Image (cartoon, rainbow, N blue to C red; front, side, top):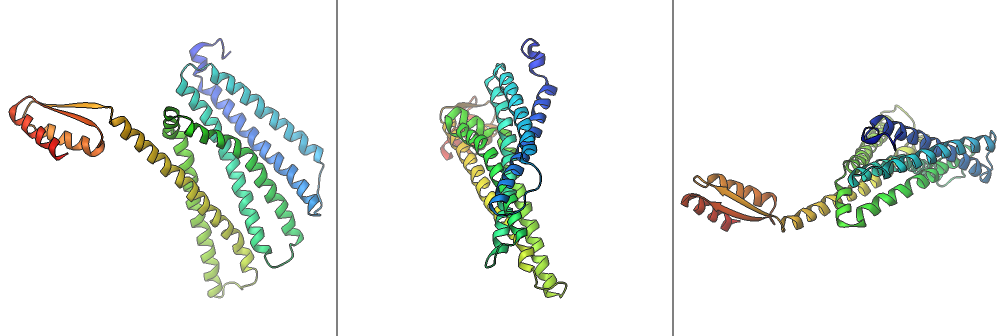
Length: 306
């Protein structure tokens, strides 16, 4: 239907929505299935009882993986039939950022859980409950890493592949949305965990609680606060690098652009315009043209000041 349906079917928003929705749900199911499978293996390594059958988990994992692979293949075939190169890139980027977002979220949950278990178990034997949590959080971390690393490498390779493609990728609203989303998430996580940690300490000082298990209660908050700082620094660095690269590209482009500023009155308009253009794009090549003696004098004087 897509192949023979012409431009109308190619531009169908409903078809794209269906494909991305199924891919999103299948990817979530695959991450969940892989997490359960890995947690069972880690439970056995840590001598923790493993309920249920591994074959049930494998069957669910295979179904979600096949669904994901099939709809990804269909999406890729649809993308190849799109005539516009930039539109093709947009479809690919949406898929990459969608999968990368799922994988990174799982990775952060697992990493935060493992750090909290490490903090709570420092200086003492790891209890049965902590061993079970270690199995689950480590499984989530590995599943998230596997799903995140491949699309994220493709995203970063596109940014660095060439000047034209890299600039388009850096300007992509999807990339901006992804980076700002994780910056916002990291900020809110750090604020939330900080408020919780401070509130527990205030409760202790006011006699609202005892010091028993205080470290254990604060462990998860500390773990996710540390992760939030790391995520904020990493994504903030990427955003600053994007902005610097785009400014550099704009400066190089401005060196090849000639702009003629024409004023046929007293030159005040041309003078202001020359000033504003120079402030916005210092490397822009400006050519003042005054059609009256006063306009010519004012514009020439402004060019000397620039």
